[in-house]
Length: 624
Picture (cartoon, rainbow, N blue to C red):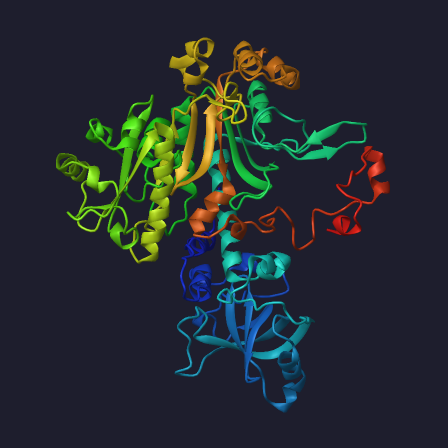
């Protein structure tokens, strides 16, 4: 695919990250959006009633007659105004002579954020009045004609990124929030990366972009699905939580390489890092193994990565699920900093400390610890590295144990050791959470543990195939999903000790966030039926179409899905995935702009054979 040079340069400008900072960000963001526009970009202005964008004009345009369209950013002394569009800002000089009274009236009386079209001449700013903070800061537009295209009423908030606004207000007036440079940057960067992904997959590696249905049927396991009523009594569609079954069926159909920028839906309630509807880069391949999928994704991210960031280095490091849990206490570790979990069980084999004795006497019992650098400032009542240990446990620790602990933990003065004892996975999980909490505390004190410019990728592999159900530990559920293939070395365990079987499931983690997950699939119908019916106790009739397809010559296949929203959130440094989605839902899954979900009159529900059963007859409850 050919890219004009101006577009390549614009992408470099669009790909600067947003930093979390107390300083106003709109200036640097604006510069990043338009830094490369050193010459006219006719493609931006084709088919439009303008000759140029507001952000592209430079000294090289001096003397040119131009027509610009945009929003009034602000006005000063009825002499100057700044015009803004998606591309940047430019200063406009309001004419003061009597012959241009009508033009002056339009530009002086139009409220801020009104939409105007102006025509005039590009001139140099007077000496000493240049603005080096604006890429257009050396020029201004002497206006000859002006037209008010649409006046703006009083705004609920100013369109400035450094003006603090509650998220609820931003979502209520999302169409105004989208005008900000920050949102413009995020959405344009998202578009850029998706375009590069499409090019990499379709043009360079022969993938086929295929849309799959949104109305489907319920599937066993996994997240809860949204139901959509049909006109057949008692029958419902489900919105797919992912295109999983369709992508496998496409492999059975011989498409060989599929991808889709897929819309997915999960009725998971209130979660700060999730949306009821979200987007995945969904991928499936035939005749592939786990290494092939991982290499594909590494190349995909390398190719689509913003140009002004440090290049993505491949291959990404890999750890097993067991190693990740033992070292970091989580299956999505943030590897940008240390504070790793250390097993100190051997130090206390002969201890007289009761709770340590009790833990080590049980199956899978262990004693674990992490060292918090300079943690004495934030956690004063724990074991620290100096001789005056300040902890109730310290009095019972022998000198030899203390010295061995210092050696194993490599502690320094003012470091703090956090220790826990208990069942292995629970002890690791607890320390994993404390590790992140302590990192947050240390960084609030000014210590830099996690470089905000560093992107630390990690593959986590060899997950368990099954987990015990929380509500009934004697029963099993899929750790990933029921179509995940077992590890080749563990297939025999399915018939003897299925809890011990590992899967061919792999997750991609970035800076402590899971941004992708996938697996090699079961392509044998008999094995798939056994796992569904015998091990998971699922009704195989629901998946009869898939089981039948697997019996008709299904090739070996596997795939992965990248969470696009979370990936772009991390790339831009945004605090929430809602900052990289054009029209997101609130924390509780509501559209505050349109007030969705909304009630439906009873007469409109009749064709769907649905009647609402209210929890109470109270009018107040119904209104609520």
